[in-house]
Amino acid sequence: MTTSLFEKIGGEAAVNAAVDLFYRKVLADPQINEFFDDTDMDAQRGKQKAFLTMAFGGPNDYTGKDLRSAHAPLVAKGLNDSHFGAVAGHLKSTLDELGVPVELAQEVMTIAASTHDDVLNL
Ligand code: HEM
View (tube, rainbow, N blue to C red):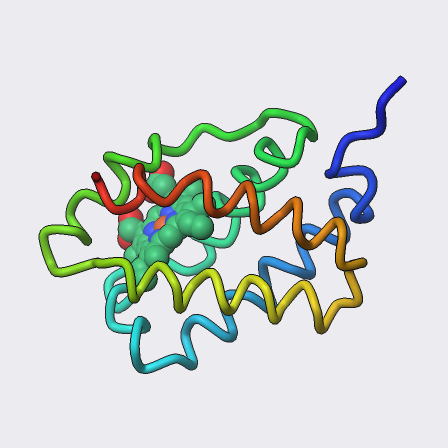
């Protein structure tokens, strides 16, 4: 039996803590926070928790949009690689602050990087 990344990082409680801290960082960052001006952040946190749970091999309860269509309006407003890098940086520092072991954090960052072209509609 293989243990999923979701279980290794600590399951639902760990993903919830990570998503909450991650969006505090994102919303505090003037390079990117304007993209979230019209976003219902409670709904967004819920979708991101479900998305990451699925991406980490946990239960698949994600019913949101695919990442390409979800971010297309943002690309139209100028979303680019530097914004993606800023978001990835906040994810990395979130994992560091929560004490996620380096190897697991690296797996998470590999999954995040795999969404790059969809998020930027490339
Ligand atoms: C690691 C890469 C990323 C992942 C995995 C990701 C994931 C998601 C997910 C799951 C949603 C919900 C889709 C839905 O509404 O059904 C979403 C929406 C959104 N994302 Fe991302 N995202 C990423 C990168 C970014 C970046 C770089 C930005 C901007 C700096 C961004 C800004 C947004 C915004 C503003 C929404 C909500 C749009 C609305 O209000 O409906 N995302 N994202």
